[in-house]
Image (cartoon, rainbow, N blue to C red; front, side, top):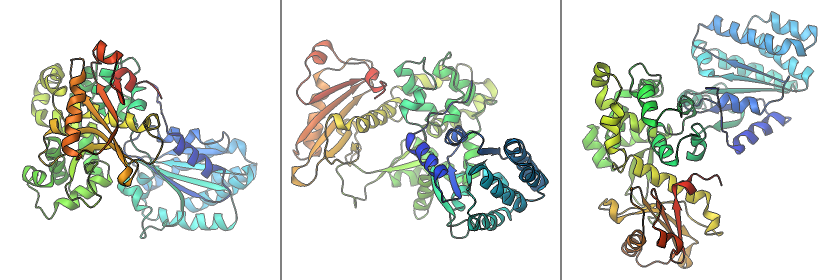
Length: 479
């Protein structure tokens, strides 16, 4: 399957602005395990005025030689003989970078992309200092060279921006590439139904590297078996590799992630399930949040200072690995992955509130954010949910956003039903009942009902006032 990238226009525009600007020489792009970031970069560049290098884990001399050869191949034909010779004869990073600065002047501008830059900086601890000195000289000469450093290791790319880094303060653009949303993810398997897309989102999430491996001629389960559950599958060790690369204590962090994957959403529950000392948990949770592996959540009707938080796994792929693969590693090595989906995952994926039903709620909230202008054109709060202290899911509100502010504010509320039965007015009555209990009779401006199986004909044809009915087909319709 060819590499595909479905990028966000804001990030592409930011790169284009950096490329076109007369000032600025360094940009960083970081995105965990994100296949496609180089494609995003290359889309923003102009043919003949750019060069790309994919770094590898090699010795310093080999790394330099590979970069040197890529620059010679990409640029020699566009340059005068003298500048091309300077690049070809460069013996070290400094001389090569200065030659690239001269090439930029000759071409009127030049952008050089180094993908997986941490591979280079780890093998040569002097490289960042050399870059800093060379960029200073290039800047003083007014040479229009743009250097773009990108990498999948979040922690190592963030280190480039810290005070201790020689490159601190030199970067003019810093992009973080986040996972694709549910609509972008669906484009990697266009032949799947919306229901299959929800299942795929539940176990694969939105990382393009994973999505790019999918084959939509197969079922979601067959893909998960061959890619993740199969001990020889390309994603079977992905979680272990990720934690080992990003974290100093991967086993401890894995214990926290495993506890949350089992439905322990409060700090006390996580402490009990993981065995972490209470005083240490905030440190681990904070680092996992920085890596976008864990998210914290407040009830939509809570004040910013409210201390009652819940935690969840922000990466569906990581969650599915801890939920389905980790508990069965021994059996998978002995019996293989064939039919594992049918035996272990299919029976619960549609009933476990942290699996497809929870993903359906996340998708519904994202849809609401995209379509908020259909319901309200003024100021509104973030689209979240309203939770109660007891944690009873039946008594909570799946989709909620405060509309307006002060005494004149009202609410948009939604209920999500991931069941095989078509919904009627009972779902709306449940939502209204929960609103009465949790919101102290505050005014509700708009009700939304989301249903996997759709709605009964009478209810669909005559929905109550201020009520919007949304089925799977509408959720996956492009806005």
